Image (cartoon, rainbow, N blue to C red; front, side):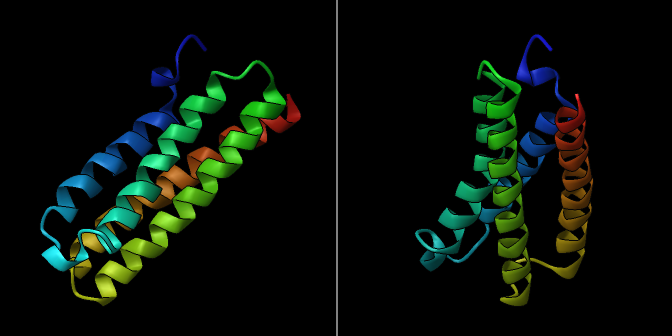
Length: 118
């Protein structure tokens, strides 16, 4: 691997983050420092951890950051569910983003598994 940008998991995470930033522009203004901030932070943390981990010198360190990315992904999924239940996003948009979450989670788990056995 020559760069994190070549990783499918990073591409998927970046796409999810961009969609969340666009989506949260439509949230109520009073959520700017609440749910909007938390959702954006957790989503961007997915890729930030992948990037930081890929810059580390050892597989063990990379794995630690991938586990953190997985935690941020789970946090993001919850914030999306909460956004749906609060009626800030539609059921259709939630399902669309949840489908992306599932693909990203499977891809991230596959990368983790491949690094653990290598």
